[in-house]
Image (cartoon, rainbow, N blue to C red):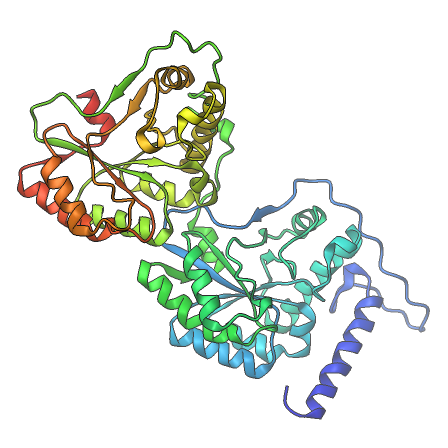
Length: 482
């Protein structure tokens, strides 16, 4: 806001709105249907809103999707100069964002809100006064959301579909009130660089780049740290490096899906704890017994979107299908990445939950870990994974192998070709040389999808070199069955 008179007008407008809103009954906000009287009389207090008893609204901290897209969202409304600079920066990088605006700030400076819409961005509800909703009763929560909706609708013509509190945290009354008001969802986030700590633009951008994910929701504030404006450049560069698009929240939600609960997915109980394991039969598979020039390419562990997406892109470019043995603790924090593997035509399998050396666990502890991993992976990909288990570090003994078999994993997937690519000191040349000299018909090749190693650099050369030698690539489960 420029000049004292402008500030004064904004303050007076805020005071007026507060007074008016405090007097208006809930059914007659901003020109509603409250009856008028010929003679002035006492103003009736707004009726108390009763707690909603229906189903609460959807709650979103990320969107379930394998598509290469995510949403950049902002909370609050900074001053005119900051907002103009931010909108210009978004235009520079062709980013469409979502702005969660407090209703009171929209009332104070509607021109900023209108400019946000004119630039092609989305406006949603950040409550009326950005209050701590945990300190309000249901009536207060409802009115904070309802009044903000009405202010935004009145000033911009847009009816918000989503609500986010100032901090992103909220009590259970918020999704109830959102449902009461017919809103689409309560939104938090899964990527929050904590710009309140006043990091530099580069630091904010680097944090977001590290955690960037398909279906992710980035949360920044427009009225705390001015470095948020400069961070847009780094966010855009990080997204472009992976090949991800930054789109509005509503588009992201509409493009995504809703995950079924675990118990509704066929095969979720294909792995179970079984204490009677001592006579269970198992098979250790190091390679396939075949003369055909077929090999199975496998990847262990889990990595960031940047690493795994580049692996998936390379495999797609070379028309190769692989088998991914997933460390489920990583899958738990990024299920969309696991789903992307499946949608790419690859198999995913079990590599434990916590990545222990299995011989350091009791058989009972191992079963718990493996069953938990099975459930996490199943829920992430929304289908049963391939029933192969690969022990971390490749170490297993007879009693643990029997315990694994009893859970539903009788086939323990080992490998005969490894280059120790997980060790960053092994160069791309080392990896390529190791694979090319060790591979033979029926080989199971072990690589890793960890960050900051040389596997991505080596992978195209491995694929091209093996193809030149006449090898074809088969998913491990298919090769074993053949």
